[in-house]
Amino acid sequence: MGKRVLMNGNEALGEGAIRGGCDCYFGYPITPQNELTAYMAVNMPQREKVFVQAESEVAAINMVYGGAAAGKRAMTSSSSPGISLKQEGISYMAGAQLPGLIVNVQRAGPGLGDIQPSQADYFQAVKGGGHGDYRLLVLAPASVQETHDFAAQSFDLADKYRMPVMILTDGRLGQMMEPFELWEGKIETFDKPWALIGAKGRSGNAIHSYWGQAPGLEIVNLALQEKYRLIEKEEVRFDTYKLDDAELMLVAYGTSARLCREAVDLACADGIKAGLLRPITLWPFPSREISARLARMKKVLTVEMSAGQMVEDVRLAVNGAVPVEFYGRLGGAVMTVREIYEKIKAIA
Amino acid sequence: MEEKVIFSGSGGQGLMMIGKLFAHIMLEKSPHLTFFPSYGAEVRGGTSNCQVVLSDKEIASPLVDEASSLVLLNQPSVDRFLPALGKKGMAFINTSMAKAPEEGNVYGLPASDLALEAGSVRAANIVIFGAYLGRRGFLTQDEAREAIRNAFSGKGEKVIAVNDAALTRGWDYF
Image 1 (cartoon, rainbow over the protein chains, first blue to last red):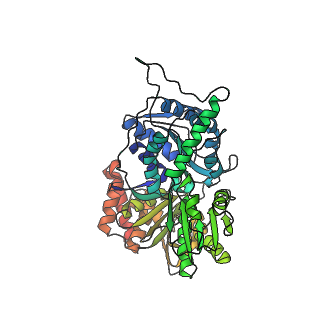
Image 2: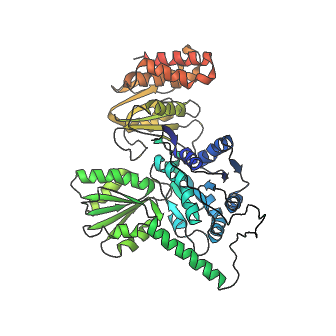
Image 3: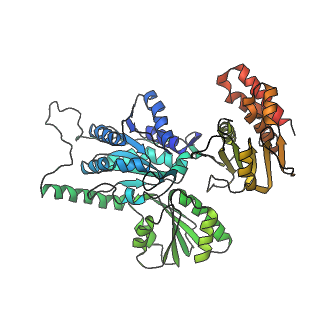
């Protein structure tokens, strides 16, 4: 096991990405993710890796495109408004089948919003914030340890499937310091015969997302969809807590899930049979894992720091089998454990 | 071990510094801990705060609703956080800059004046941190002195001596 250290989520994410083989980081400052950029500014050059503070978010994501096209492990990070700016580049990366890591330390919107934590970018992350039929593999950590570990593991996933991976965290997880163990796993190496690294002795490669008229573009799209179906089969991650004999299933991710866990404890102490299912991959979403556990459930309660976004995927998974309730706080407000517990009591 | 402490003062009084230092000191002593800074926009003369939670169980929220300890360096911090003190909690208040109500669980000490006596008014945070550690018993006085020495190790012997004296004045006050 790795050494136990204390850092905030943003710094732990940076250290995880470096341990996961990040070759180059491109970023532009925005609160509440600045500690990540600052960490990379100090630590990437020290480890003989590339750090560039780009002139804008748009520039940063296109530098990631360039780094990835050259076969390097490239990443960028931002917070909600900055992630909106990157959407064109993310769509281009998906179209060109380029791997890379994009980190969104969510803050409240819409618009400039506020720097307080939020989960209102779920739709953007999971349903495709940019144009076209594409997906990101979206990981949602609920602790500083997971933030660190997922960053370390994300480049292997991105390279394996040749697609961008997003880590969706929030201002609270980013700003909070918590002890964690340093990741000491092994990095996989992937052949990248498609990379643009000079064509001496062979014909040149081309990386682009323009395929002209049908049928070329439809064939590319069908191939993407085939890849996404494989990922839905192989990469779903989730966690459960006290769910085995529960009659009320809470579904929550990230910061909300931490709070739900304690609310479940309070409910169980009151004799209410509640449990938690925590999606770790938001896409692919653990739909089958939710529907497979509905037989004993009387109700499902989704808790989010949003007006209700993931709850739509929960409802699709439940498909009318039992009522799906929702509790959310908006605009940078974070619910308390007590609020969730009161909601559980009201519907149980 | 269960502790929920809020450190609060005006920006620049070194509240983040002692909060982070406390979290690092407790890293090996507490199975679970969180440190959370106030990172929103704060007005000049208002409060800057950080919150540390120690627990034997997993911690759901790093935010303190009911504090077991308060370390408050100025009046706006007292006004804002004293209502959050739990019934069995302890509040440490810098009476050089704030009024401490006369209640059994409120410990007032003139931290800024004591810091000045120790060599620098800037060490008021360390004085009140010393009082907090001395009353709370998470570590011995020798451990606390060593932690302060390490925290200021890059700043030279004079700074270490001032902060060591500040810690002792706080520790010995009650």
